[in-house]
Length: 112
Length: 113
Image (cartoon, rainbow over all chains, first blue to last red; front, side, top):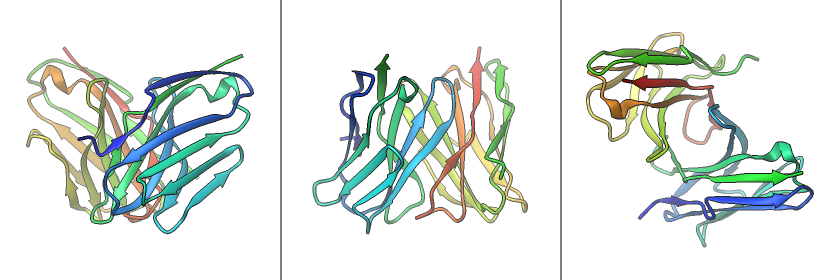
């Protein structure tokens, strides 16, 4: 079973709508959870890092929550814009290691 | 502050050749990790270096190797290239790994013909 899952794989929303992106993980021994954005053919841009002791983090229009007991993290993007179109990836670091384990990503299209 | 840089950005090689990719981390960062990204497998961890020592290794064959220098710059080497090695190779740096936020470079696109 995949350790980190992101559903749906793709979604399309009209401009101005709020985006809700889901990330599920199977291991409760999580150290950190980090959200990234990736534009086509480019590297990853870090959006938010949530440490295991935190419940949420906010940066501008972005808010990420973490619920270790249910194995879920959610990234909210308020008032979406066409420039938010990208693939969003979540990744966790387990307590015992230093490697990021990634979900498959959610490809987002914000239509003008 | 300069971000993570990777060179070269694009490479085309043929099967059987070897390749070396380079990564310069953010100044002050001592942990460098390497990831392979393919459409079929997504992002997979290759290895992590900290203070010139390999601290973690993913499930890749021995053809994939790396090293880190005293200035924290890192290189990864792939020998005897196979078609399946075609991928985007990303490096990430952080202050010390673990709890620290990781920052990625733009990647090196490797195509094996």
